[in-house]
Image (cartoon, rainbow, N blue to C red; front, side, top):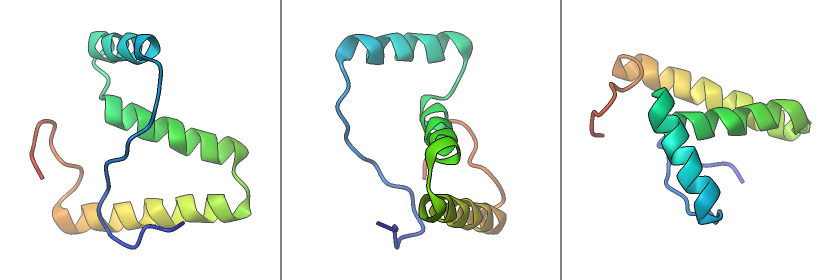
Length: 82
């Protein structure tokens, strides 16, 4: 289902606590932004396993994001509030 808003959204998903905590310490230790890392994983998964429609949705989402960032002056600074 395509998102009609031009904003990102929060979602809830279930994951066992121990791997989630281990991921949290790993991203903190390596200086990786957890949200960006999760989004990168989703992109990679779609690129590797997505069908034609899913790849088209990813491309459209990437284009929207590029346009939004161009209007707003680029990627938000770390720690900046929306």
